[in-house]
Image 1 (tube, helix red, strand yellow):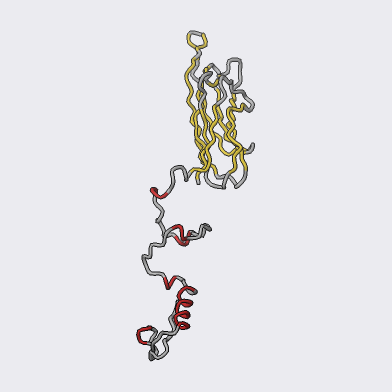
Image 2 (cartoon, one colour):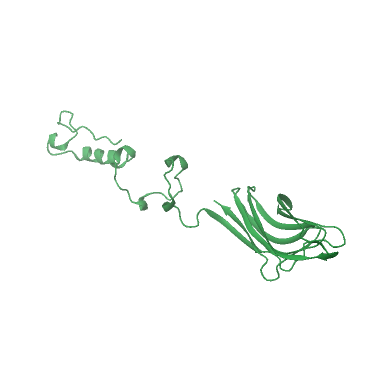
Length: 219
């Protein structure tokens, strides 16, 4: 804290009004040196309203300087909580085979090791025949399965000795929350069907709008 010097003839007082006259320039100089050479927190009044332009732009505000729950929604810029968004359309008019069938690819994009929301929908048609089929939708990150969802279809049978075939729309949801590492990643939506027999059930994506998948990384 800046401390003024005692004035000559002032009986220890630090005020020029109590000092011998004329005032000594050296003592005034010492006062000014003490004030301007020792500006710190103790010399700044509470509520001094120091302008932002006077503060160093060094990014020095740390988490410890913020009170818990101090940052509200109104203080966060729109879009600041999302760092990356990737979208991809599901492949059109694609028959899902018993081997891996690639339906969509998202990325590559660089993750900050935060949560990634994977959302979307597969749209197509199921032609249900006598042999049932199990549809498996996998989400893969960098070729590794991180989510697998399965559904089974069979809606056909024999009526008066004749095979009845039913075709109905398919809307298969895709939803997963991933926690990738801080690196570049690529996501893939891969589908397979398990169907055997002479009249297996088949699944084909729509030929106009087969759906869209999204990868949304949160800050």
